Length: 390
Ligand code: MG
Image (cartoon, rainbow, N blue to C red; front, side):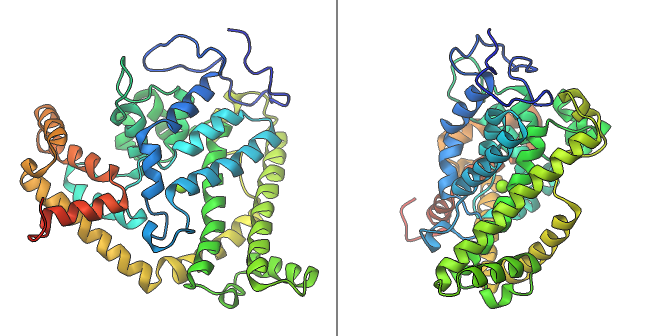
């Protein structure tokens, strides 16, 4: 197929190449007028798991307010930030976008509380990790194509989705797990998606935190990264309403992050004289990064958010409820899989046949991880509320 990169005016020699992709598990014909990574992105957007992100918690449960981030809007913000940087650095924008849109597909309902709850339920059966679950979603759980399970994505997109991996799991993933064992790096696009995730949540959590009233502008003055930009905005626009000041500060925070990543990464590429994707992979550490200064400032911001937002008593209350909702359902289904909807009963049977009780637990974890917040709440009610018709 003719080089589909030609419409990328600014594609760098170290960018991933869709024409030199390591391919898909099930070989397919060319993608026609799209390139391979555009095809991946489109499959991700058309997946059921992607649509479910709309009703999955980022920090605030969806029904707490219409303006808070959900996993879906978070994923879109990650992709938007990463695409800007990808373009500036001459990376493959479509691959970057595909990875970003898929990075949270395996997230449970109720954010990190949900993931922790499911992980503790799954402890005796191999554990649960949302990042690995994202890979399970695109490799197996989406079932809508005639010729294969999963979305049959390119190696490079799958590699980017798998950000972390224990050595044990890596051993079972073959080629894809290799870099976690020999400590090599993924593509620049994967490195970028990983960092853009952090940029997105650090900044939108400030915005959502302020909107909720759980944190205040006064409290945020202790965070130097926020304070510096706040003072600049106050100086530039002394008459601006408090609401607009907040948006202007967050906007400048995102811009600073983006500029910092572009500048630092360009310097790193130069310093290591990087001219190909292979050279990127062979390095002992990531090339796409924050400057040391910004990393320090981010640490301060993260600690602030941890203590004042993620540990806020109202977030904690929801986390506690999430643990109960997930824990009780898992226990009931493990105890008696006949409580599951028919479709999932057959999956439990098939997986149990293959790997015993671990298989039963994994099939149940797949079911629970796929739930949206509101589905999990309704299903819990159907299971345990004696006054409700099941
Ligand atoms: Mg994320």
